[in-house]
Image 1 (cartoon, rainbow, N blue to C red):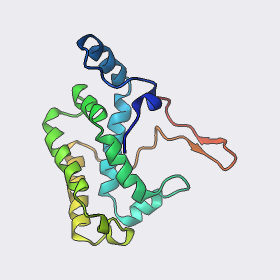
Image 2: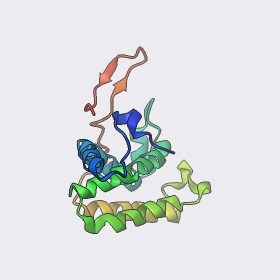
Image 3: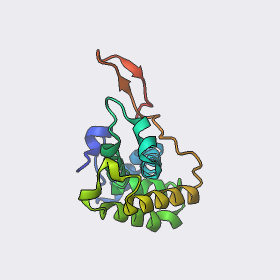
Length: 165
């Protein structure tokens, strides 16, 4: 899935022109808390059991879809790199996080099934890896952070307003 950052944030992708690179990075830096939240949320989702994931389920939140989408967004290079460039997460964790992403990418499509999350060996190991990473990063909560999520009712009224980007 290709992320169009311009449409999401109204900014242009990084330029290769050195004079504009610094301006682009400064613009991306404004959203580093959002990028960090996505990264941690993706790890939290993979640390949960099916019962815990089911509690997150709602009209606009499908846990299986979010498992895949959240991690892909969190590891979009410009978003991922900003978290380290801004020292929100120590650079020493970068390779371990990238290794986790590769692990997720290598999960066979045939086991991306709800009924396998709790007992398939790969999912059990995935949950252990996610929990270990969260512990190393000093994240003690396993609560999905919905600070940036805006929820609407059936009539289109805002039920919960997320942080503005």
